[in-house]
Image (tube, rainbow, N blue to C red; front, side, top):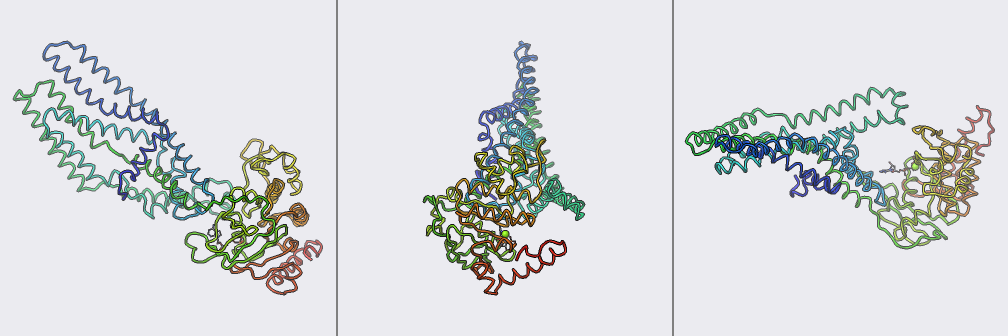
Length: 602
Ligand SMILES: Nc1ncnc2c1ncn2[C@@H]1O[C@H](COP(=O)(O)OP(=O)(O)OP(=O)(O)O)[C@@H](O)[C@H]1O
Ligand SMILES: [Mg+2]
């Protein structure tokens, strides 16, 4: 349990409201308080009216006061609802802004992969979609109702002090006791358990599988539609079960609550009746106090309802992520300019790297040493999971090694100005992004002259794919979608455009995996020509492209086990030779059947 009130999620929820919109939050609180005290004002106005009738005084004043209170009682709730719904929307938008900021701003990426943060991320990402509770615009109304009643109860109790100091204490105490006795039925306290979080995460994933177009093929082909649906329903049912179990009414608590409340009310109303019959209490005062004695019961029904609990949980999650993500995704920021780097070499020196999290004990790279002369091309080969992509990510400084250094011309990458260093790098990642944007922005996300974009597209063999203005997504009216290989050409064009804009290091992680054989050879040669002044790192399982690099390194068990040119490594008759021969043999057979020439690889 949080030890300080400011750490409580309810507190955090209310402190976020004025940050989202100060004026609306003030209006919401003002309406809330006014709505809360109106029933008490109404009771007083009625008492004054009864007294006036009894004493034959003027009725116009008391009647007008009653009418005004009555009208306000009718008019305020819908206005309050409108303010609350507006404020709820703004608060949701504010939180989503903070969440987006927390995800995007850290220079590293470890915060997005940390399993400890994924549950919060799930809760924070979808909180306003109505998946885990009503959206904030609606919750605000429930929260307001609960709190209005609470304030109404307190206002009645204060007036009741005029009758007897002990009466409000007894009544309010009794009604408050119901909160304590029935607390388990009202609020789901232990929402943050591993079981709840796991069910939430699984339900979320199944839901995404069901509604995401890219998943639709496999869902159908592998007959997973039913599985997805069942998993979603099962996890949602689990969530509901956990909630019902956590919040069910307990018999003993109900009996105790009833007993306490009945005794307290009998005591107060007995006292009121005897005071009235002995003449100590006027008729008008009796009307006021009796109504207030009833009004104190509002304390029982009001308060911080389940809606506040549901609305405050994602707020707390967003705020937690905001503070947790920044350090996890942080990287030391250097100030040295990387202009012109590397002019001599890139060097990995005794690098050890393990992904943060559960696998931290088993490093992907360990004792990794490699020098890449500037202006040369290096191919990296190795089995799946050998750490090739990891090397590319380290070079981009998406992570830093745990020990050892990566240097550009002798300068530790950590000393370099990060954004400028990243500008020095252009890349086709293995899982490159397909922007739902016009072709132009896919090639040059941060802008470039059209002529440069067209040149890059031509070099990648993608000149005739689409107009520069065509959005590469079917989700848009005049958009289009591309095949896997066509997308890869766009990614290549993006990397080449980066080179034309000044990048000096080119990372190509399986850049031609989806290209047809003829396209691959032709395009790869063109790329090597265009990037001949760059330091190019090619990661590929295709030896037909690998052999074109100046040098090739074989990566195994986190280390370089062979390094040299294609001819040198073939002569070495080691791991490279084995892999090459194996592929040449397989390709040879396959191409024979199709009647294609034998020497694709030779
Ligand atoms: N984000 C990540 N978090 C934790 N572990 C990871 C992450 N990415 C990769 N790994 C692990 O690191 C190891 C190396 O992965 P990497 O992607 O570098 O392999 P690779 O050589 O590129 O393989 P492939 O040929 O399949 O592309 C693998 O064991 C993988 O499970
Ligand atoms: Mg890889």
